[in-house]
Length: 374
Image (cartoon, rainbow, N blue to C red; front, side):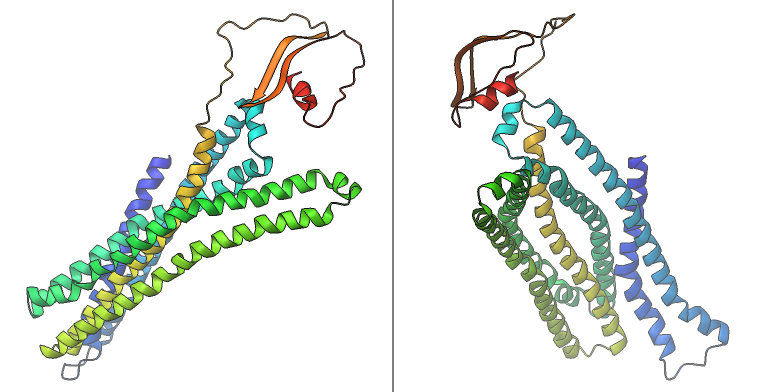
Protein backbone atom coordinates (compact mmCIF):
# COMPACT_ATOMS: atom_id res chain seq x y z
CA UNK A 1 0.00 0.00 0.00
CA UNK A 2 2.73 2.49 0.95
CA UNK A 3 4.67 1.68 -2.20
CA UNK A 4 1.61 2.29 -4.41
CA UNK A 5 0.84 5.61 -2.73
CA UNK A 6 4.49 6.62 -3.04
CA UNK A 7 4.56 5.87 -6.77
CA UNK A 8 1.35 7.87 -7.35
CA UNK A 9 2.79 10.75 -5.31
CA UNK A 10 6.00 10.70 -7.38
CA UNK A 11 4.05 10.85 -10.65
CA UNK A 12 1.95 13.74 -9.31
CA UNK A 13 5.12 15.53 -8.21
CA UNK A 14 6.62 15.21 -11.69
CA UNK A 15 3.44 16.55 -13.30
CA UNK A 16 3.31 19.48 -10.88
CA UNK A 17 6.99 20.26 -11.42
CA UNK A 18 6.78 20.20 -15.20
CA UNK A 19 3.64 22.37 -15.10
CA UNK A 20 5.58 24.92 -13.04
CA UNK A 21 8.88 24.78 -14.90
CA UNK A 22 7.69 24.58 -18.50
CA UNK A 23 3.94 25.24 -18.33
CA UNK A 24 4.10 28.81 -17.02
CA UNK A 25 6.84 30.02 -19.42
CA UNK A 26 5.03 28.30 -22.30
CA UNK A 27 1.83 30.10 -21.32
CA UNK A 28 3.65 33.44 -21.30
CA UNK A 29 5.19 32.65 -24.68
CA UNK A 30 1.92 31.53 -26.30
CA UNK A 31 -0.84 33.50 -24.61
CA UNK A 32 0.54 37.00 -24.05
CA UNK A 33 1.53 37.63 -27.70
CA UNK A 34 -2.00 36.70 -28.78
CA UNK A 35 -3.71 38.89 -26.18
CA UNK A 36 -1.46 41.93 -26.60
CA UNK A 37 -0.85 41.73 -30.35
CA UNK A 38 -1.29 45.13 -32.00
CA UNK A 39 -1.47 44.30 -35.70
CA UNK A 40 -3.32 40.98 -35.54
CA UNK A 41 -6.94 40.39 -36.49
CA UNK A 42 -9.47 40.55 -33.61
CA UNK A 43 -10.21 37.24 -31.94
CA UNK A 44 -13.66 35.73 -31.83
CA UNK A 45 -15.28 35.14 -28.46
CA UNK A 46 -14.53 31.41 -28.49
CA UNK A 47 -10.95 31.97 -29.60
CA UNK A 48 -10.46 34.47 -26.80
CA UNK A 49 -11.96 32.06 -24.25
CA UNK A 50 -9.70 29.25 -25.50
CA UNK A 51 -6.64 31.47 -25.14
CA UNK A 52 -7.38 32.80 -21.67
CA UNK A 53 -8.25 29.31 -20.39
CA UNK A 54 -4.54 28.49 -20.66
CA UNK A 55 -3.94 30.25 -17.36
CA UNK A 56 -6.46 28.36 -15.16
CA UNK A 57 -5.65 25.11 -16.98
CA UNK A 58 -1.95 25.32 -16.15
CA UNK A 59 -2.62 26.26 -12.54
CA UNK A 60 -5.30 23.55 -12.23
CA UNK A 61 -2.85 20.87 -13.33
CA UNK A 62 -0.09 22.35 -11.18
CA UNK A 63 -2.23 22.78 -8.07
CA UNK A 64 -4.13 19.49 -8.34
CA UNK A 65 -1.02 17.41 -8.91
CA UNK A 66 0.83 19.31 -6.17
CA UNK A 67 -2.00 18.67 -3.70
CA UNK A 68 -2.10 14.93 -4.42
CA UNK A 69 1.69 14.79 -4.16
CA UNK A 70 1.73 16.51 -0.76
CA UNK A 71 -1.29 14.64 0.67
CA UNK A 72 -0.17 11.16 -0.36
CA UNK A 73 3.33 11.80 0.96
CA UNK A 74 1.79 12.96 4.24
CA UNK A 75 0.08 9.57 4.54
CA UNK A 76 3.24 7.63 3.72
CA UNK A 77 5.38 9.75 6.05
CA UNK A 78 2.95 9.33 8.95
CA UNK A 79 2.91 5.56 8.54
CA UNK A 80 6.71 5.43 8.43
CA UNK A 81 6.88 7.54 11.59
CA UNK A 82 4.45 5.22 13.36
CA UNK A 83 6.61 2.21 12.48
CA UNK A 84 9.79 3.94 13.69
CA UNK A 85 8.17 5.06 16.94
CA UNK A 86 6.77 1.59 17.64
CA UNK A 87 10.17 0.00 16.97
CA UNK A 88 11.77 2.55 19.29
CA UNK A 89 9.27 1.83 22.07
CA UNK A 90 9.63 -1.94 21.61
CA UNK A 91 13.42 -1.59 21.80
CA UNK A 92 13.16 0.25 25.11
CA UNK A 93 11.20 -2.67 26.56
CA UNK A 94 14.08 -5.06 25.90
CA UNK A 95 17.04 -2.96 27.05
CA UNK A 96 18.63 -3.69 30.46
CA UNK A 97 18.18 -1.42 33.45
CA UNK A 98 21.81 -0.33 33.16
CA UNK A 99 20.90 1.46 29.92
CA UNK A 100 18.37 3.61 31.76
CA UNK A 101 20.98 4.36 34.38
CA UNK A 102 23.27 5.79 31.68
CA UNK A 103 20.56 7.77 29.86
CA UNK A 104 18.16 10.26 31.36
CA UNK A 105 14.42 9.69 31.08
CA UNK A 106 13.84 13.12 29.58
CA UNK A 107 16.36 12.51 26.80
CA UNK A 108 14.79 9.16 25.91
CA UNK A 109 11.34 10.77 25.80
CA UNK A 110 12.71 13.56 23.62
CA UNK A 111 14.12 11.01 21.18
CA UNK A 112 10.81 9.19 20.92
CA UNK A 113 8.71 12.35 20.50
CA UNK A 114 10.70 15.39 19.30
CA UNK A 115 13.27 13.48 17.23
CA UNK A 116 10.62 11.23 15.69
CA UNK A 117 8.48 14.25 14.78
CA UNK A 118 11.49 16.01 13.26
CA UNK A 119 12.25 12.89 11.24
CA UNK A 120 8.64 12.73 10.00
CA UNK A 121 8.74 16.39 8.95
CA UNK A 122 12.03 15.78 7.14
CA UNK A 123 10.72 12.68 5.36
CA UNK A 124 7.65 14.53 4.11
CA UNK A 125 9.61 17.63 3.09
CA UNK A 126 12.31 15.65 1.30
CA UNK A 127 9.86 13.34 -0.47
CA UNK A 128 7.70 16.32 -1.48
CA UNK A 129 10.52 18.36 -3.03
CA UNK A 130 12.97 15.69 -4.16
CA UNK A 131 10.75 14.95 -7.17
CA UNK A 132 8.83 18.16 -7.78
CA UNK A 133 11.73 20.63 -7.59
CA UNK A 134 14.05 18.72 -9.98
CA UNK A 135 11.11 18.29 -12.38
CA UNK A 136 10.49 22.05 -12.24
CA UNK A 137 14.19 22.75 -12.78
CA UNK A 138 14.48 20.36 -15.72
CA UNK A 139 11.28 21.68 -17.32
CA UNK A 140 12.36 25.31 -17.06
CA UNK A 141 15.90 24.62 -18.30
CA UNK A 142 14.50 22.64 -21.23
CA UNK A 143 12.26 25.57 -22.16
CA UNK A 144 15.14 28.06 -21.84
CA UNK A 145 17.38 25.90 -24.02
CA UNK A 146 14.64 25.42 -26.61
CA UNK A 147 13.66 29.09 -26.79
CA UNK A 148 17.18 30.52 -26.60
CA UNK A 149 18.40 28.18 -29.32
CA UNK A 150 15.63 29.45 -31.59
CA UNK A 151 16.75 33.04 -31.03
CA UNK A 152 20.54 33.09 -31.08
CA UNK A 153 21.83 29.58 -30.76
CA UNK A 154 24.19 27.99 -28.27
CA UNK A 155 25.94 31.17 -26.97
CA UNK A 156 22.72 32.66 -25.68
CA UNK A 157 21.70 29.33 -24.12
CA UNK A 158 24.98 29.25 -22.20
CA UNK A 159 24.56 32.85 -21.04
CA UNK A 160 21.06 32.11 -19.77
CA UNK A 161 22.09 28.97 -17.88
CA UNK A 162 25.57 30.00 -16.70
CA UNK A 163 24.48 31.13 -13.25
CA UNK A 164 22.34 28.05 -12.51
CA UNK A 165 25.30 25.83 -11.44
CA UNK A 166 26.82 28.71 -9.46
CA UNK A 167 23.80 28.72 -7.14
CA UNK A 168 24.70 25.18 -6.07
CA UNK A 169 27.95 26.37 -4.45
CA UNK A 170 26.36 28.10 -1.43
CA UNK A 171 24.08 25.09 -0.94
CA UNK A 172 27.08 22.76 -0.63
CA UNK A 173 29.08 25.11 1.59
CA UNK A 174 26.24 25.95 3.97
CA UNK A 175 25.01 22.35 3.98
CA UNK A 176 28.33 21.19 5.43
CA UNK A 177 28.05 23.81 8.18
CA UNK A 178 24.51 22.74 9.04
CA UNK A 179 25.36 19.03 9.07
CA UNK A 180 27.80 19.63 11.93
CA UNK A 181 25.29 21.61 13.95
CA UNK A 182 22.00 19.77 13.44
CA UNK A 183 22.74 16.99 15.93
CA UNK A 184 23.66 19.56 18.59
CA UNK A 185 20.15 21.03 18.56
CA UNK A 186 18.49 17.65 19.14
CA UNK A 187 21.00 16.85 21.90
CA UNK A 188 20.36 20.14 23.71
CA UNK A 189 16.61 19.69 23.29
CA UNK A 190 16.95 16.33 24.99
CA UNK A 191 18.85 17.98 27.85
CA UNK A 192 16.04 20.54 28.32
CA UNK A 193 13.44 17.77 28.29
CA UNK A 194 15.50 15.85 30.84
CA UNK A 195 15.65 18.86 33.18
CA UNK A 196 11.88 19.25 32.98
CA UNK A 197 11.33 15.56 33.72
CA UNK A 198 13.75 15.40 36.65
CA UNK A 199 12.40 18.60 38.19
CA UNK A 200 8.75 17.57 38.02
CA UNK A 201 9.52 14.07 39.32
CA UNK A 202 11.22 15.53 42.43
CA UNK A 203 8.86 18.45 43.07
CA UNK A 204 8.33 17.58 46.77
CA UNK A 205 12.02 17.15 47.52
CA UNK A 206 12.86 20.46 45.83
CA UNK A 207 10.28 22.30 47.94
CA UNK A 208 11.36 20.49 51.12
CA UNK A 209 15.03 21.44 50.79
CA UNK A 210 14.49 24.89 49.26
CA UNK A 211 16.22 24.06 45.98
CA UNK A 212 13.99 26.19 43.75
CA UNK A 213 16.69 28.75 42.94
CA UNK A 214 19.29 26.09 42.20
CA UNK A 215 16.92 24.25 39.88
CA UNK A 216 16.04 27.47 38.06
CA UNK A 217 19.73 28.22 37.52
CA UNK A 218 20.42 24.69 36.28
CA UNK A 219 17.54 24.93 33.83
CA UNK A 220 18.84 28.29 32.64
CA UNK A 221 22.16 26.68 31.74
CA UNK A 222 20.62 24.00 29.47
CA UNK A 223 18.10 26.48 28.06
CA UNK A 224 20.84 28.90 27.04
CA UNK A 225 22.81 26.03 25.49
CA UNK A 226 19.76 25.12 23.38
CA UNK A 227 19.29 28.73 22.25
CA UNK A 228 22.98 28.97 21.37
CA UNK A 229 22.78 25.80 19.26
CA UNK A 230 19.64 27.04 17.50
CA UNK A 231 21.20 30.44 16.77
CA UNK A 232 24.32 28.84 15.27
CA UNK A 233 22.13 26.66 13.06
CA UNK A 234 19.85 29.54 12.07
CA UNK A 235 22.79 31.79 11.17
CA UNK A 236 23.64 29.55 8.24
CA UNK A 237 20.12 28.33 7.47
CA UNK A 238 18.71 31.83 6.92
CA UNK A 239 21.66 32.93 4.79
CA UNK A 240 21.01 30.42 2.03
CA UNK A 241 17.88 31.90 0.42
CA UNK A 242 19.28 35.47 0.11
CA UNK A 243 22.51 34.15 -1.42
CA UNK A 244 20.62 32.20 -4.07
CA UNK A 245 18.36 35.19 -4.80
CA UNK A 246 21.38 37.50 -5.23
CA UNK A 247 23.07 35.07 -7.61
CA UNK A 248 19.78 34.66 -9.49
CA UNK A 249 19.47 38.44 -9.87
CA UNK A 250 23.04 38.61 -11.18
CA UNK A 251 22.27 35.93 -13.73
CA UNK A 252 19.11 37.68 -14.91
CA UNK A 253 21.03 40.97 -15.18
CA UNK A 254 23.65 39.40 -17.46
CA UNK A 255 20.86 37.85 -19.50
CA UNK A 256 19.21 41.27 -19.80
CA UNK A 257 22.49 42.84 -20.90
CA UNK A 258 23.07 40.17 -23.52
CA UNK A 259 19.46 40.43 -24.71
CA UNK A 260 19.95 44.15 -25.28
CA UNK A 261 23.11 43.51 -27.28
CA UNK A 262 21.39 41.10 -29.65
CA UNK A 263 18.16 43.20 -29.84
CA UNK A 264 15.94 40.48 -28.37
CA UNK A 265 12.22 41.23 -28.63
CA UNK A 266 10.19 41.76 -25.46
CA UNK A 267 7.91 38.74 -26.00
CA UNK A 268 10.78 36.27 -26.11
CA UNK A 269 12.67 37.96 -23.30
CA UNK A 270 9.68 37.85 -20.91
CA UNK A 271 9.19 34.15 -21.61
CA UNK A 272 12.88 33.46 -21.00
CA UNK A 273 12.94 35.45 -17.76
CA UNK A 274 9.85 33.56 -16.55
CA UNK A 275 11.58 30.26 -17.26
CA UNK A 276 14.81 31.43 -15.60
CA UNK A 277 12.92 32.49 -12.49
CA UNK A 278 11.17 29.12 -12.49
CA UNK A 279 14.58 27.44 -12.59
CA UNK A 280 16.03 29.45 -9.68
CA UNK A 281 13.04 28.87 -7.40
CA UNK A 282 13.46 25.05 -7.20
CA UNK A 283 17.19 25.55 -6.53
CA UNK A 284 16.25 27.74 -3.57
CA UNK A 285 13.76 25.13 -2.36
CA UNK A 286 16.35 22.38 -2.75
CA UNK A 287 18.73 24.49 -0.68
CA UNK A 288 16.13 24.78 2.07
CA UNK A 289 15.55 21.06 1.68
CA UNK A 290 19.25 20.46 2.28
CA UNK A 291 18.95 22.34 5.56
CA UNK A 292 15.93 20.29 6.58
CA UNK A 293 17.69 17.08 5.61
CA UNK A 294 20.54 17.90 7.98
CA UNK A 295 18.03 18.36 10.80
CA UNK A 296 16.45 15.02 9.99
CA UNK A 297 19.79 13.23 9.87
CA UNK A 298 20.61 14.55 13.33
CA UNK A 299 17.30 13.21 14.66
CA UNK A 300 17.82 9.88 12.86
CA UNK A 301 21.27 9.46 14.40
CA UNK A 302 19.81 9.87 17.89
CA UNK A 303 17.05 7.34 17.21
CA UNK A 304 19.44 4.83 15.66
CA UNK A 305 21.73 5.11 18.68
CA UNK A 306 18.94 3.52 20.73
CA UNK A 307 17.60 1.17 18.04
CA UNK A 308 21.10 -0.26 17.49
CA UNK A 309 21.97 -0.45 21.19
CA UNK A 310 23.18 -4.01 21.92
CA UNK A 311 21.51 -5.91 24.73
CA UNK A 312 24.15 -7.72 26.81
CA UNK A 313 21.50 -9.73 28.66
CA UNK A 314 20.13 -12.50 26.47
CA UNK A 315 17.50 -15.05 27.42
CA UNK A 316 18.91 -18.62 27.61
CA UNK A 317 18.00 -21.07 24.88
CA UNK A 318 16.39 -23.32 27.50
CA UNK A 319 15.13 -21.07 30.31
CA UNK A 320 14.50 -22.50 33.77
CA UNK A 321 10.81 -23.15 34.39
CA UNK A 322 9.66 -21.99 37.85
CA UNK A 323 6.48 -23.70 39.02
CA UNK A 324 5.92 -21.85 42.28
CA UNK A 325 7.90 -19.05 43.94
CA UNK A 326 8.55 -19.46 47.67
CA UNK A 327 9.09 -15.75 48.33
CA UNK A 328 12.62 -16.09 49.71
CA UNK A 329 15.31 -13.76 48.31
CA UNK A 330 18.91 -14.97 48.35
CA UNK A 331 22.03 -13.29 46.92
CA UNK A 332 25.26 -15.28 46.97
CA UNK A 333 28.51 -13.43 46.24
CA UNK A 334 26.79 -10.98 43.84
CA UNK A 335 28.80 -8.22 42.15
CA UNK A 336 27.25 -5.54 39.94
CA UNK A 337 28.69 -2.51 38.14
CA UNK A 338 27.50 0.27 35.81
CA UNK A 339 30.14 0.20 33.07
CA UNK A 340 33.38 0.82 35.02
CA UNK A 341 31.68 2.05 38.21
CA UNK A 342 31.12 -0.64 40.83
CA UNK A 343 27.78 -0.53 42.65
CA UNK A 344 27.74 -3.84 44.57
CA UNK A 345 30.74 -6.00 45.45
CA UNK A 346 30.38 -9.64 46.58
CA UNK A 347 27.04 -9.22 48.33
CA UNK A 348 25.67 -12.25 50.16
CA UNK A 349 22.29 -11.95 51.83
CA UNK A 350 19.24 -14.11 52.52
CA UNK A 351 15.78 -12.68 53.22
CA UNK A 352 13.19 -15.30 54.26
CA UNK A 353 9.65 -15.11 52.93
CA UNK A 354 7.36 -12.87 54.99
CA UNK A 355 10.24 -10.91 56.50
CA UNK A 356 10.21 -7.09 56.65
CA UNK A 357 13.65 -5.87 55.59
CA UNK A 358 15.04 -2.31 55.48
CA UNK A 359 17.91 -1.16 53.26
CA UNK A 360 19.99 1.40 55.16
CA UNK A 361 23.15 3.14 54.00
CA UNK A 362 24.63 6.39 52.69
CA UNK A 363 23.95 7.75 49.22
CA UNK A 364 25.71 5.69 46.57
CA UNK A 365 25.99 2.59 48.76
CA UNK A 366 23.95 0.51 46.29
CA UNK A 367 20.49 0.48 47.88
CA UNK A 368 18.67 1.32 44.64
CA UNK A 369 20.82 -1.13 42.71
CA UNK A 370 19.98 -3.91 45.18
CA UNK A 371 16.25 -3.15 44.92
CA UNK A 372 16.44 -2.99 41.11
CA UNK A 373 18.15 -6.38 40.98
CA UNK A 374 15.37 -7.86 43.07
